[in-house]
Image (cartoon, rainbow, N blue to C red; front, side, top):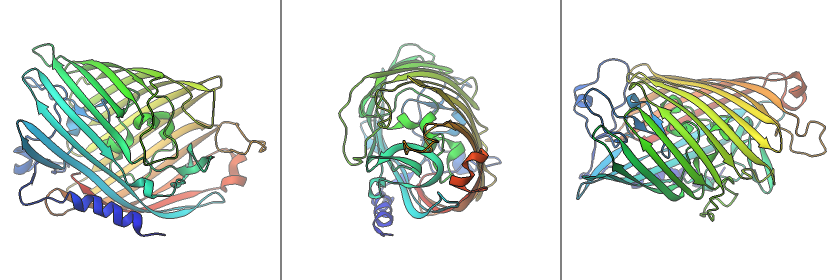
Amino acid sequence: MSKLPFLAGAAALAFLSPSTAAQDHGGHDRSAGAPSDDEAMDHSRMDHSAMGHGDVASPAEGSGTARLPANEGGHSGLHIDAGDDWMVMAHGFAWGVYSDQSGPRGDDKAYVQSMLMLSGEKDTGWGRIQLKSMMSLEPLMSNRGYPNLFATGETAGGEPLVDRQHPHDLFMELAARVDINVGENGERLFLYVGPVGEPAIGPSAFMHRGSARYNPEAPITHHWFDSTHITYGVATLGYQTRTFQLEGSLFTGREPDEKRWNIETPRFDSWSVRGTWTPTPAWALQVSHARLKEPEAQHPGENEHRTTASVQYANGRGLSATAAFSAKNRDPGDTLTAYLAEVNWDIDDHHSLFGRIENVKNDELFSDHDDPLHDVPFRVTKFQAGYAYRIPLAGPLNLALGGSVAAFDKPRLLDAAYGKNPIGATMFARLSIGR
């Protein structure tokens, strides 16, 4: 395997290594037990989506305009006072992974996942301005991505990807958000718009959820919950209070194509609505519905109505969990449902356990139109568990070493294609700016 993806991922992090003039104000890892003295003095997390008043904590921000439980905190990493009341934040990771998936359809691969977030934020007398960007060097990976049994979605070389996870695009987000105060108790109107962004659908994307922080694999339900987290052309208008957020989006329904380095032409041909309730700092509950125009290139002329619901929990002492449901109603076509439950537990300052259970009804496992199982839906369950050992490095840099193992429950009719008991195993080293 070429060393280029590893070197490129490392270079992205090296570019943002802390200088003597920059100080990390958000890299403390919330773990079980009372916060340290340094944590108690940390007031600079870049998360002010609904200003706290009295004893009510501010909900945290996930991907796009999604809300997380306040106990998740804001994005930790490198924070720099840029003057004129602007705060600049850098957060990201380079994640070296080796995956070995067994069975006739299995494969093994060493690869690098990467993400870099650069954002600027300014609080004003009338509200707040945010400039947001997120990038990835995963286009250096083959368009076939990495092996992930029972995952489907997008194409490589014009052929549907099956049992693979596609790489992300270079530009994952290029957007701006403006919040305007309309009340004295945290009420705001906001507008989020950009050539690349995420519309108001579903829970926060998996790489931004505390419950999936150290999980090295994308969910096999990714295209039920997260497929719109990179969308070319998004405009979202919303209203929020300290405990409630209602928003609607216009966006491009088609998923990104195979050209991973460019920005595609916005179409604004789809819509979504989402309501989120954050009754306490520990909880975030959302429901959403969207109408997507021809989201998948392999299903031309087929639109989709997608409905999701999710509950997220964070106790602020190292435990984060998510439970979610999604239904994709194809028009024309059947309704395919998916369930997900995942958890991350930072036991102490170094040891973390994580897990994920997914159940999905998928009719894309056999892409050959001449195969008798083509377009036949199968319900599959994936069980995954893992461990990470966390090592603080210099400044905001952190290293996590670990691995995971996955097993599957599937219909016997799939034994010929997948083997009787396929197993997925991974090992990883995650170098990050912040947590």
